Length: 95
Image 1 (cartoon, rainbow, N blue to C red):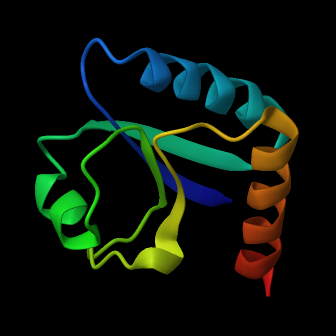
Image 2: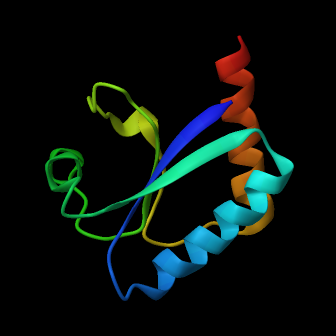
Image 3: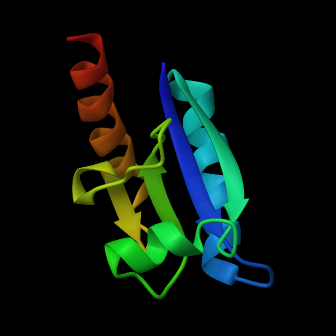
């Protein structure tokens, strides 16, 4: 299973679309994700140099995130593209 973190903020239309996309993908792929408010992850966003949401990250227990943990920032990929990205990440987790 691939664990993800979706960093969002209140009243963010792109964040709402990202949540819908992840709910749909969760039905097809062995993923689990949690939503966190951007203010909870402000240190991570600042470290990575991002000033926009949503941000989708591969969950990192120690919160020592790097660019390799970032799946997308701001603009959402199309459904088929995000599914492909997550499938590649799942293959890496299995190996």
